[in-house]
Image (cartoon, rainbow, N blue to C red):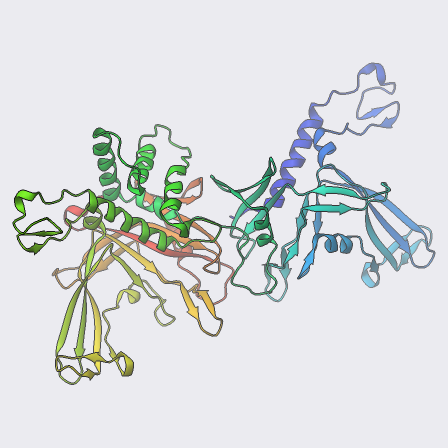
Length: 573
């Protein structure tokens, strides 16, 4: 489950206090006149000495209650380690602090028991800051229980937090001045899912921390984390997450991993090679594969740096798409491997310099091991309604990333989505130019001619909605089986595939959220969430199918599915 950062901070600080208080020296018997210590010295109960946690984080609040009948004011001091503030739309920390100290009337069922009146009375209550702490921790209450929804909802309100804050207290004559040095940011739209990132000021520079990734940012970028000025916004850009969970799935793709490790071994024996995405990925896989420890974390720093250098889309702070990342990565690997293929020598070239032709025939690049693992062939068949003439075009998928569009009418199971060799009629602007060179109504269908060894299925969960003028996530329930049968036009029987990895998108929109992965290894399913990995039951996979209702609190949905062929020599899982 997704845990709350504020609850963690509270638990941690209070645990440190308890440990430090137990380690404090107890009063000696020389100072105790009334028998054993039992927390009293000379008949007076002794409070534990203040720890360094108290000295840094503890402040004092005064809870004032004034009886409206006798005007008697009752004051009670309370200590705090952080301030939890209610928030409003288009507000600031200063206005939230004023509301925190505003007067509240106690009446009806909330009446106050006045000791002087000896009865329940209407009263006015307010909270004042008596003594400010050295380190002021402010918790913005962004999760509110909504009775009409019967659940908590995240408040994405815009709340401005200044770099310098002035705080008034009842003890000090002037204001206490504070400087902002850290912000914990929640990325996501609900309390049960999402991701945390941090902004930290160090040596007059602001740093952005996202798991193992750290980079310097401009001070002006902090305002992008204030929140949204609109209640419903597609941009809950309170931070960024990286789409590299597809990389984890590729590691557990046995044929791909073995080929990449072989490439790394051959490359290493040939000496120093030019750095590119392929060499960085191969080195990362080699580091993971050569680990002797059963558990541990390897930060892919070199790979991530190279990725950002190769493609500026993956720089900055925007949420990136895992499918786009996977497509970019596999196509980059193909380009690198094709360039490394041996070019035709001049002895075999009869028509002048090579320029891609041998004996006057244009040579296609040799199929790489990426092609052999991921590439399939589609047949695009168009039949004119008038002439009943068929036109067929074979389409190479490089790599084979068949996009499955799960519409509202076929989300009951996984197989209906794969029945995309349906027939539909094209009309008007979509008319087909037939063999008699005129526009004709036609029927078009797509068939799988040759299935790949590794079948990657991308569920198109993000759809552009014209009425909203933005993309919307489709949380439709799409069942993906553990074993999948796929019909092709070349093979007599069905190709049988076994599911071995799922990339899951957590969130409600394309511009924010988080990715986790489910991976099958040695007949056990593992759940990967950044550096955390744990074993899960196979039955837990169905919780990532999606929701049967359009609006649901569950936003963990299967996004990219990885299947491996079990037929013939391809069986390796």
